[in-house]
Amino acid sequence: MRKITYGQAIKEAMHEEMIRDSSVFVLGEDMGIMGSVFGLTKGFLEEFGPLRVLDTPISENGFMGMSVGAAMRGLRPIVELMYVDFAPICLDPIVNQAAKMRYMTGGQISIPMVIRAPGGSGRRNAGQHSQSLEALFTHFPGLKVVAPGTPYDAKGLLKSAIRDDDPVVFIEHKILYASKGEVPEEEYLIPLGKADIKRSGSDVTIIAYSRQTLFAMQAAEELEKQGISAEVLDLRSLVPLDWETIEKSIKKTHRVVLVQEGVQRGGYTGEIASQITDELFDYLDAPIKRVAGLNVVPPFSPALEDHTYPNPQDIIAKVKEIVSK
Image (cartoon, rainbow, N blue to C red; front, side):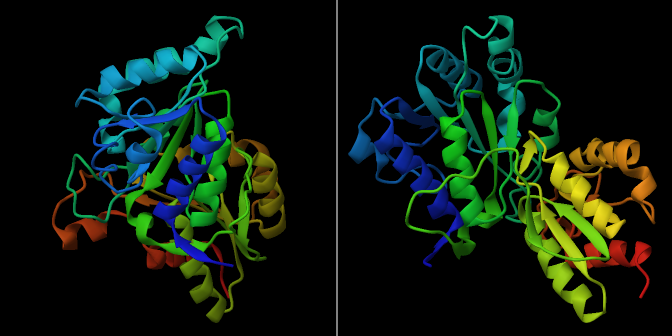
């Protein structure tokens, strides 16, 4: 099977859906002439024209509101926030309009839009361009939230998100754009709300998503050398959450380590930890452990930034706290 980058997988997903469905269009800052800041729509303007590839003003609140209106009228916008950090500028159209419109109209209006939101640390983009804000979106009923960690998952999930009739926030880790993985040339879809066991194990379940899934895999490989069998569960979809797969894994391993890049305070894995405590406490043989980013502003300094978000060694250390061999 061919190997392509995470960025190429996202580009292919958008391109294929724009060919398949004329109601799909892309918009955002520098999406047309520049081909997006990360080059993911390069060539789209020439192929699809200015009515389906829109360069917007630097006004996130404006073009997000326009996207909601377009979706209400039956179009399927793919709107890019250049960085997820800019989401607070346009929260009202996302959380008060897109997320609530289907409910408040009794199902008469749906909002089939995708919000692509590059995020994450590691590129030395400093405090205002390096955050992981997925927990913010998971708080609002009506929004679906997806955070793939591999090219295969990114393409299959994005195609499903574009075809979904509800608003989907699609979190893309910027560091992953250059990472490569196997992606079939034939069409495929990955359903939203379905986690994936990336590695089977028996001693502990490591639950992660986005870039931290790759770190979890590295940690599991090292732990295996030390006689510890770690199962790596990639959530892929945060909302809806695949609780069935989580439950099955924990009932098998009886131990769990939850991993996220975002700061620990108010983080999404805290919600999962609470649900595990409520529903699976009797199956646990050890306390739930969390690995998360430090509660600090992402620094520009490479040495400092690398210290603020989890790495494989941090995951290994937490696993060893609850698994003795």
